[in-house]
Image (tube, rainbow, N blue to C red; front, top):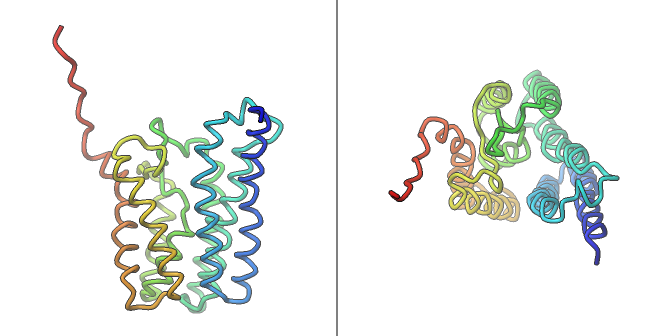
Length: 236
């Protein structure tokens, strides 16, 4: 198989996220939240795999006909932002006016963030909260805190999108990657577990989600605070 054909298949693999988004949306309309999150978790796995594949087969060079970055952003907006915001609005976790505020703030703030050319840092991390509302909403479904807590988190994270705060990319941020990648995989496992048991309040998956979410949220900020140790060079 030629490199050009392999690059095309990577694009086609990425595009399956659009189908997964539609399946998640159909489940959300029917308020089948466990099914919706299952499709979103599968979409998250696809998103985690297609990036390394795209870099391995250099899709920009070997199949430049399709814009992989644009394709990825379109699907990410659906699966990371639009559908989770709808679910939060429709679920009843946010009554009356709070639901309207949250759905407007999430969708509007995120679309502005997605077109910001300063989104990525030099070490392939994110500058500002990377609009991972799919992960946030799943945790809210699992923990079901009060609506004031959800509203406060949404407003804080939306503001954080436009602040010079670093958020790691689990597969591309080199520093602490030995911890970050397992944490991201663990978060995916706990998310699937929590969804499987229909967010049962006694599930241990909730503790796993809390621990892994805290790490993924604050690891980048910690890296900004903690200076990276200098490499020791042998004396010549």
